[in-house]
Amino acid sequence: MIIVTFINEFYVEIAYNFYLQLKKINREKNLIIFCDSRKTMQYFKDRKITCGLEIYKPLIARHDISLLRSKESKSGHNSIDYALINFIKHDIVYQVLRREARTPYVTYMDSDMIINADFVPDLISLMNSPKDGYNGSALIGIKYYLNYNKTPLKTYNQYIGRRMIVNCGFMIFHNNESTLRIIYDYIKFMESFNVYESAGNIDEILLTDYLDHHMINICVIPDSINMLSDCGYIYPLNEIRGLHTKTFHLTFYGDKKGPLLGLNQWLTLKQIPDLSVYDDCIPDEIPNDDAAYVTKESVDKRR
Image (cartoon, rainbow, N blue to C red; front, side, top):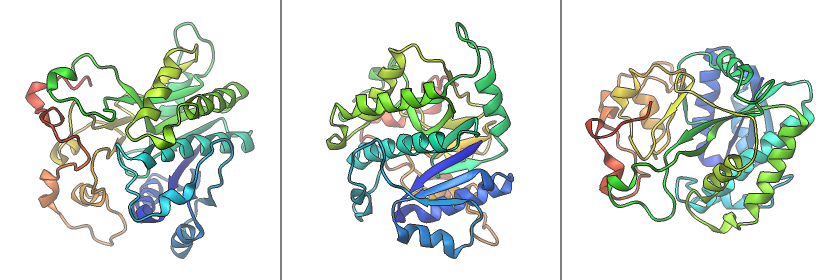
């Protein structure tokens, strides 16, 4: 399996920490880091990493990658460049699938991950598990979550019954012609809606619609492999410590380094201090309304 991630120069420390976490489970050589620029690539070269390292060049998605080099580029939920990043993710997967014909699976992972244990065997087993109405390996493995679009919902009751959408931060793809055709088709489908000019999660919503309305052999990545916060419930750090999952995605936390430090997962330090002050770390990319701060007692977390 090949693991790929994309990074710009403002998140190099997080990506380097991701590399060190993979190294902890002997999976760093599975990784290819795609960089937005030579400056970003040099950061990793200076640290003598032993994974793959490349500069990203667009293939099937049309966009101006220079947008991501601005200091104003936060790439967070509800930002325009969040959609751009998601296009880049799929373009990278498409390129790696095409050129690595002997690799059966390619997994895309965002670098703001906590890795507790080796997740690769479970992912491969999941893809090869029998699916109703399908034979053989699933084409795509997807993690779903509850998110919001341009206009945040104002009350908790408005979240009830809303469907989950695709989270593009953890995806696995089976390497064959059908998968390549699907990726190409849905990128072109999403591009037709001019999502590069749209803030919010319109890209993930459109991808969810595409997968829902096409007969595609997909599987859902379970919580035992990956978990993340969503608009239904934001995990505080003291709860993340007790979760039984092999990876946790730090969605909705604007300060990625703080939670990693607080969870003793910031591996770039020789000695990691016990920073209990981060236990009450509050995500800063949530809509400014009461619905985003649902308490543990008031929501079924659907786990």
